[in-house]
Image (tube, rainbow, N blue to C red; front, side, top):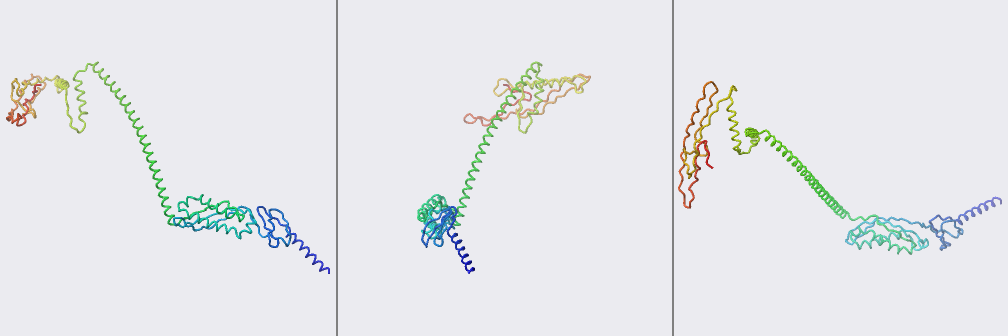
Length: 389
């Protein structure tokens, strides 16, 4: 009897413990529990300590009241221009009515997924590929409106719908990459051209400023150089007038400048002024008076007498001798010899040899119209004579 009483007591204790466990229920925060009594909905338990009737009430389902994020796998969607794109979506929703979410829909997550796919196909079917790629906000707003309206009676609120990725076909992706590459090359070419243009503008401005500064420097240098040359000329002029320089010094300086004038390969025409020639004659006389060996003055060689100047054709003054051509001088020039210095008296100069005469060419009679038949040669001038002015 005692053993039976002990067993009964143990069974009663176990029943009390099980009843207490079944009676007291703790619900966590942001959760709700659906309670059924004999298979019928009785009430909803919220966060905290709750009491149940043991062996009569039971909790059917625990509902999470927090916002849930459900990603869906990529779905093929056909656009308006008959292109198949893969769209990956994400849904953010929250259970607002645990009783409706339990008894109005069997699996609300699967229902939301299928509703999202069908709504997405309806929206994308009215857009082409370009609009699909650039109108994500419109697609999100359309999906959220349709899903929120459909899931409201399920006790679910759709907070947000996002498109994770929109992948066009591989051929379209290649074309888009080529287009983007061409656009980048175009922008790079435009930027390069603008940079080159800006560089040329800056270079031109720099060259302009440099040219202006260079011209200003050259102008100042020319002014300073001209002032220096003017002062040098004034100084030389004053020195010449103060020293009473004669023509011989001027002729000597002219002879010093002749090598500089003769520099270069071009043909030059030297014109000697009459003053310089007279000064050169004076220098020649001065040099001729010097003795070759330096022992004493040398005897001056008298100049040859000049013959009378020939007359031009038609002149009243008769020619004293036969004419000679202007070109090359006819006959060899008369040699002039100097008497060497010594004790003897200087000998008289030898008279010049008579140059051979060249007869004047005949003059053709004038042609009809008064024009001469040929060119008339100028009058012949003997060596040492000058034509009349």
